[in-house]
Image 1 (cartoon, rainbow, N blue to C red):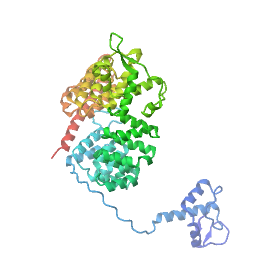
Image 2: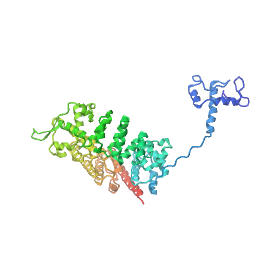
Image 3: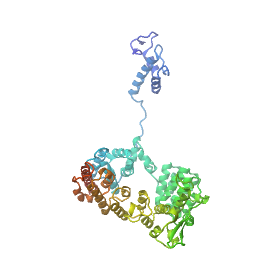
Image 4: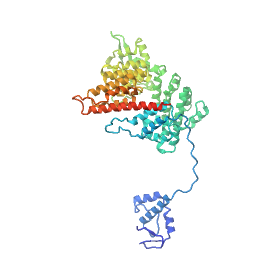
Length: 558
């Protein structure tokens, strides 16, 4: 090239000028930084003069020579430097090691990270990516420690799937946090772990608790507050109260949310003071927490307001609920958590009414209406088309107050016409009401719903049932899938429920599925090829259940 240097003569070939020694040229070329050279090369030497200039050389030639010198320097190695201090040893994990067979199974599950169900026809092989969360849940329940050699693969899996992170970090233990501090790709573990992996003082170490609360980072403080609250609710509330006036609004909101754990009447004075907070979100959260305490003063105030709007009409022959929605939202209502401005498309008066009824203790309605039960209350007619608004507010109140009797009454019978209870107006609300019921009763209700209405609306309800499903619920799901298959329905319409069944059916149900794995005769109006797809789906379900049973045996082996 035009800027080449003849080291023997110290002259630039093809260029007239005074000779320059090689040592001098290299010294001048070494003065430029790599970033400066890259910038000049990208912009062009006419727009950006390079930081080097050697007499007798053109700017492009000097730039290329300087880049060559810097490249050699960059490749030559690092300057000697003092040795870094040795790494601190990882905290020991004293939990028992996995049984050998379970460790080998975990290796297989992690190796199949991309799964078998990514696009196209899934076939009959189980989707190992969906079995990994179940494996982790079981391993954590048994208190096993993760094999050290699999920690990188576990962290990589959790990095790609946020739903795995809580289970992976619980299983991986303190060594995962030690690794996360060394690899930026795994820093999510520090963010996902309360306090970023910092060891929290025990609640009885009052001096250390106070120091961390006053000086710690936000993540450390929120973790500390949660740990103290789980052990001593009063001590956590006192800790929060000691710095409450000086906290930022967004921090006050997060701290206040921690009081949901162990919420009780002793928290009422603090929450009442929070109703006067300068942040609207803090006030709303405080009001919500107080309304979840039926004996609180706020609940009493809301009950009085709601009673002026919803009352028994004793002038009619049939007991009736008469409604007169509020005409204004005054300052006292706003202080108690009523949001004055309704969302788009919602009337102001109905919006205010719903909030009042939702925050009123449900037990007050039975008192006001002559001791009627929740079922009897819901059966009463409501005047002027207000029934939907009142029942929907009762639904929200039952969920907030976790009232089993009202939740049961609002759900109604699972076989109710129209697939809806007397108060539930959507699947989401029915799912929330179900959450208040005991596990077995919840499963029995969903099983009855499926038997009456099929699987088309059951997916969201099934997601709230305990795993593994009870025999009654599992049988109802399998029977409904079998009915859909015999009817020639599109199997792809039930892929979501089939996926849930693979994860949630009791493995003991595997034997009864044998008869469903053959290819059925397709009705004349069936979707083309539906029989083959159904056979594949049931074969995959059977294989998955048997694999889950094997995984459990491996984890529980002596």
